[in-house]
Image (cartoon, rainbow, N blue to C red; front, side, top):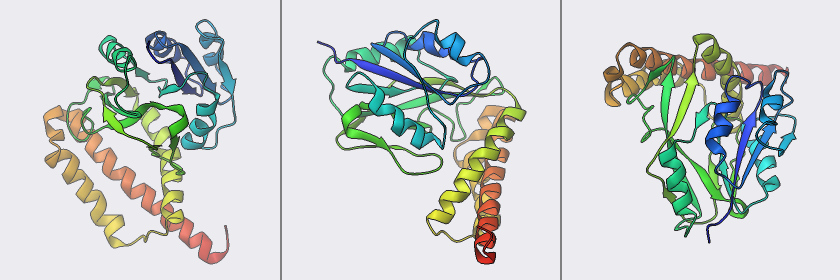
Length: 256
C-alpha cells in the first residue's frame, strides 16, 4: 500500500499563482495551505480546492515551515512554493516512490524560469538548484537560518529524477522586492555566524560569483537572460555583505 502524502504550500498574497499550484498538487492525500494572513484573494481561491487552510504569522521561511510540518496529517510531507508546479512526470515518480520508499528524504531539482525565459545553465539548472522537498515528517526539520535554510533529515536521502517547474520572477520589480527581504535575512545570518565582512567579501566575492555563474556554469548559453541573472546574483552578494557590515556597525555603536 502506498504511504500517504501531505503537500504543504506556504503562501502570502499569491492570488496569481495559487490556483495552478494547487491543481498540480491535487494527487496528494492532503493539500495544506499555510498562509501568512494574505490581503488578496489567495485564501478565497485556495478554499475552492482544499479545506486545510491554516494561518500563521510569518517570521522567516524556515520557522514557518517548521511550524507547518507537524500540522500535516500524513507521514510523508512535500513542500511546494506557490510559484512552483509539479509536472505529471514528477507526480508519477513521487507516487511510485511512495509505494516502497527507499529513502527518508528526497532531493528535487527545479526547472527555473526568469522573466518568462527558461534557464538551463548558470547555476539555475535542475542539477544545480535542488533541495530536499519530499521527506518523512517525523525525521525532518528545517535548519535554524533566516534564509536559504535546508531540510535536515535524520535518515537516508536520495534524489528524484524529474524536476519541479519554478516560475521564479515574472518581473524585475518582483525580483528586487524579494531581494530586499532576502538580503536582510542573509545579513542577519552572516552576523549570527560571526563571519567577517572584508575586502574579499565586498569586492572579490561578487566578481567571483559572476565568473562562476556566467562562465564556469555556462550562463552565457542562456543568452541575455543568463547575463542578467549572473549580474543580479553578483549584486545580491554585494548587498547582503554591505547590510551585514551595517549591522556590525550598529552593534559597535550600541544601536542594536
